[in-house]
Amino acid sequence: MAHRGFDPGGRENSMRAFEAAVRLGVDFLETDLRVTADGVLLTFHDARLDRVTDQRGRVDRLPWERVRQARIGGEEPIPRLEEVLAAWPRVRVNVDLKDAGTIGPFVEAVRRTGSRGRLCVASFSDRRSADATGALRRDGPVAWSPGVRGAARVVLAARRPSRRRWTARRACSCPWGRGVGCW
Image (cartoon, rainbow, N blue to C red; front, side):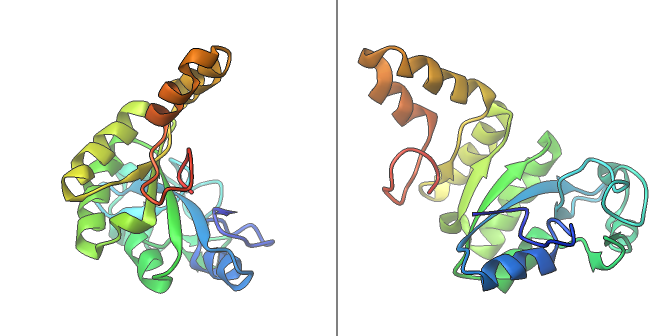
């Protein structure tokens, strides 16, 4: 799995980074999701543009017209999730919902692209993950991984043999049948 793609130049979550990972044979990408003030869903880790782009400001307070001018590493535009999904239709993607504002645009993008079967929903927040997967489950199974509390339940259950299977099955969901976790 390529975390934020693979680019030795540090252009994380860029089309170049994802392309480099796919060329290496990676078939599972990981990316983070943020949303602009006007609801455009981006593959971007930070709440602010400052660290990795040539622009400044909070992503969720800026319109897409401004954010689209930012360049990761001064070179690469910030991609939208739909661009990443379209570019590599056979690649599975683990998406980390970074804040509550990403849930609605994410669910809409997944339905628009028909990509539910290629995604694993993740978040440090169990609530965000549950809200997103709950909205998508009407359409069929959704892969997801636990947030902080869910992961803690798995660790605690490992110490109690009688609860291991029960807790592990409820902590992660995988419609592909490859065990606990997304993949």
